[in-house]
Length: 383
Length: 156
Image 1 (tube, helix red, strand yellow):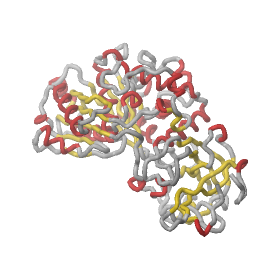
Image 2: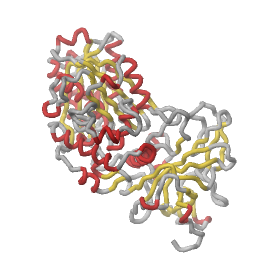
Image 3: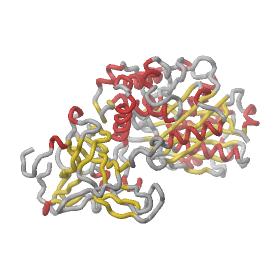
Image 4: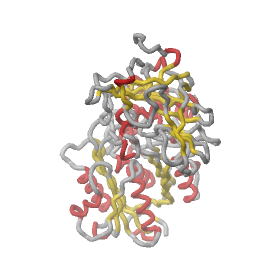
């Protein structure tokens, strides 16, 4: 049984004083239902979650007490990807015909303050000032630049592209283009990454209505098919956030959950990176976008310098990356972030992405989300 | 950085390093596959073995990567005094018996990017974080570039 996405909904990303994360989830759910032309009572099963804004299943008191099975998902940055994977399986198994996946969040301003003990680490790790995702991002790209010759100028180019794309996206948070110079000269946060090279925790909600592929045209004339969705955790030797120690690099390299998840998704889909027309990669900061291009198989390590310089990752380039502005322009409401990538992919496959539409009628889209403590989810979508 | 009278200093957590005496970081080495972890743990994440022995780590190693923490972290970060930026890095360390290698994440005593470089030789030291209720200095481990190490008692 194949799976199609027939309804998409989003609550604008950013800051929304006075509106709860749950309310932003409900807004996105209603948008997705309207897009598919169905009611909440038609949804047979739902999967959803947030990191910091409450239990998704309490949305039934707002959307309707229909008695459906509704499963809360809490899987770090891969919360949305995990909800999507389970919604996919619920249909593929033949158990359900019409399913919702949703995610939302609402984080206070400033960096995430993670609890070491929740991650199985000693409290000392936080007390001594090591429990910061931003440090990991700085140290991973620092090493990568050293090994593969990526320049600081390229870090600024990635962020400038994100804000340019965000300016063309009505639901993005940061819609003001910034020059590479403004980005490079902004305050240094975690060397070599500056303030405007980082995304910020934020708010937003996304919902998707999925159905059996053979029933998709009941709901829409432009279905997007979910060819594969995969989820992987870290293996021995990889370099991940919140690691008090690392092993020496194993023979064959450190690998990582992003490499594993991308490979699994492409294998299931029977497609490869060369088939993809538009891709959304986790860009918690500009270094992550660069490294994830190679980890997910779209180029070799070090090729990013020339690809980015030559405009390959721009809308209109050979491999457009983060056409909606990514995390950098949208911020990161953790529960919603991975599903935002899928929302954007469906818009692009429909040819409905407006001023940021990738030319040439894209046929294959790819998404990748990564998070603590070393978890990745990837999806391949087609039309 | 190293002017800490041992009788007034307490480690931030048990088991991270030997103290007082001849302080060394304490890793754990797997009897089955030789993997070394830091801190020591009960089971091996590589081979799933459960026979791990405490292993002192070498005092010196090379900087594998680094960054600078430019803003004050939110709690549970707990340090006295006004915040000043600090370096953070992974230092590649052999076990003292030379049987294994582990990259340990650590505070660095240096926060100036011009004084930090991948591959630079580093040496173990200890830094104060805060005073506890009894007035004792709570300390943690850190690494400093070996070219900049000072004798105990020498002015910084």
